[in-house]
Amino acid sequence: MRMLLRQQSACLQFLTALLMLTAMFLLSVVTRAKNKDWQHDRLKLLTQAKPLQYSTMAPPHTRHPLEVVYPYDYQFLLNEPDKCKKAPFLVLLIITEARDTVSRNAIRKTWGNESYFPAVPIIRLFLTGKDPIFTASVQDTLQEESNTFQDIIQQDFLDTYNNLTLKTLMGIQWVNQYCPNTSYVMKVDSDTFFNIDYLVHGLLRPELPVRERYISGFIVANTGPLRSKAYKWYVPKEIYPNDTYPPYCSGVGYVFSGDMAKRIYDVAQGLKVINMEDVFLGICLYELKIKITKPPPNIFNGHRIDYNKCRFKNLIFVHHYTPQELLQIWPDFQTTTACS
Ligand SMILES: *[C@@H]1O[C@H](CO)[C@@H](O)[C@H](O)[C@H]1NC(C)=O
Ligand SMILES: *[C@@H]1O[C@H](CO)[C@@H](O)[C@H](O)[C@H]1NC(C)=O
Ligand SMILES: *[C@@H]1O[C@H](CO)[C@@H](O)[C@H](O)[C@H]1NC(C)=O
Ligand SMILES: *[C@@H]1O[C@H](CO)[C@@H](O)[C@H](O)[C@H]1NC(C)=O
Image (cartoon, rainbow, N blue to C red; front, side, top):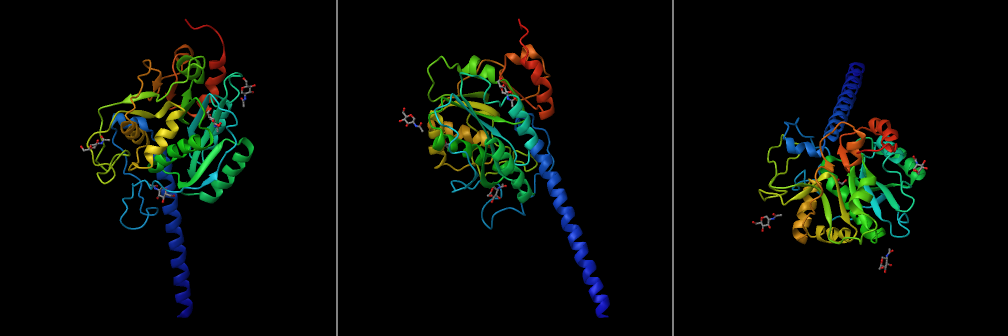
């Protein structure tokens, strides 16, 4: 009898373990799939799969699961406090997931090369949080990568889609704290073809006086929160009660003058942070009464355009490029045959 009981309980333990493993696997698949969707598609209002279940990571009781906890004293797990020795022209804040070494390596070899312009100092930083699933193993890899390249900053919040705002705010905090005299800052997603030459010499232009209270990007106006839970971009009334959003720059990429880091950081401390990072920046601009500068047409592209060298020479970014594609395109993009 005792034998039978022991066998039964061993069997039960095995089943429980199997169930937990399956659940973990499913969660990881869902997270990956969600993170592969891209912000800009919000505009197309595609029907999305059910949003991530947060029950396992939601903080206790009253707080809405999508609420972004801020202000809060997040600690730097990886930092580069001495990277900005003298004021650079540009700080690149590149949004990546902790586990995405492949994208970071492709960017280091292509548009994120800090020595790209001998006369224009550029600082490259990848922004990450803590991997929500494989926390310890991803952290080991990330630490090693950080030792090698010294271009990663990370705070101790979970790296999830609904925490993206924290990632941007971490980057802005870093600039404010460690590099306040940079002329410009560009925030850009990692899955993007990025023509840094056009940004620097076509739009910002080091020979001009540095602008102030300046921000530019792909302007999204006359929109409001999606109230259906079916959307990845769901924002409940508890998080943001108004029916409309102020104009904002699409989160795929936007550029602002160095003085803005302090302005945005300071105003953010007193606002309710929402889970859409680009919208939240728009809310900060609304509070600051700063208007987004309209860019020349078609230089910021949230949708994919097929590669064409001469077309790509005259724009700043195109969204939805994989690391493999970047590495493949880059040598051709660097060739100097004329474009009319
Ligand atoms: C970065 O650009 C410089 C100058 O063009 C080049 O010498 C260097 O090999 C590039 N670095 C990488 C990692 O591609
Ligand atoms: C954001 O990160 C915090 C801190 O790690 C965590 O408690 C929270 O659950 C995360 N929020 C979401 C929506 O993932
Ligand atoms: C930034 O510039 C100001 C004014 O020129 C200067 O006083 C300050 O020391 C600089 N800060 C850093 C961190 O370089
Ligand atoms: C939200 O609505 C309130 C009340 O109408 C208004 O005072 C506030 O400025 C609005 N906020 C934004 C960001 O539009």
